[in-house]
Length: 438
Image (cartoon, rainbow, N blue to C red; front, side, top):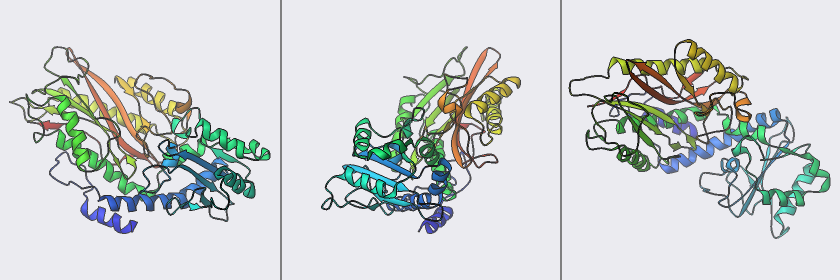
């Protein structure tokens, strides 16, 4: 089924990013087909990726525990497509019996959890769910038992205080010393992408790009009437029309180039006028994959057919900063090393950079190496010390200031990209020219 859907996607969907929303557009899959894709990708990830990750982290058993509506962020990624939450208390157990055997994937629950996790608890035989969990663990006697607790990565810190207390109380005393943090395994599970996911991730970014292109057009914007708030809610509504959840409320801001001092971009109570430089920050979720995009549009003056050369240069400078940053991506380098090297090189080139790039995937602000924060342009403990690994995705997020005459223009860009171990490629291109609004 997955190959058939990929073929359908490749035939129906275009592959080249265009700022013309009326050409080369795609449509998201119907919800039932989306569910089929999500479930098959999950099976492939568990079968092909998870054994490698567990052995690399030297973890024999992984236990994930959640109660309904208080889900562990990692456990949520293991749920089947038609489970919108955990049910009662959902306990998943993943056991690696050894390199010559397949993983055991069990649900200490009344029923199977999708096709991947098979029920291993009969309440009629053992009414106590915790005792059944302890029995399964003791029978396998793993060298390590990992639970999701982490100081540096919130998404890897999903076990609640109550669940941990009850879990530890249920374990035989001789197993207590085997408890370890699942942090390296949880983070790698969240950040690693498999090859089968990439066509769908490209489509997710393309969908986001074409919604931005439509919003940044005279189809939507009436100069002198449309406000930044109107446009924010248009992006929200447009995504909802396609059943594409947004993972944060879109923002739209204006730099008024005709002002003597354009100053900081403004987003509240601004009516869009000719000569304005618009900026959007917009992110959707599609097939459990998140996008995060920032782009710019220019509202033409009556006598203009293109953006002024000064703005084009400002955009080119920001593109140069993107190139400087992505050239620093090397496997096993820390986020801090990448950040500091890129900032130094950019400043040497005469740029005024800020870099705040982050992992993306199952979560918009994902787990993995932190490469700067907008308010922290220096080495960052914890996430900044985490190394870069291959087959991971990032939002290349940054800004650069360009001063011409007495005006300073800030170009804020964000594009989703994939690091394959050799280099960085944008999942659906990047903005290198302005959206133009007549």
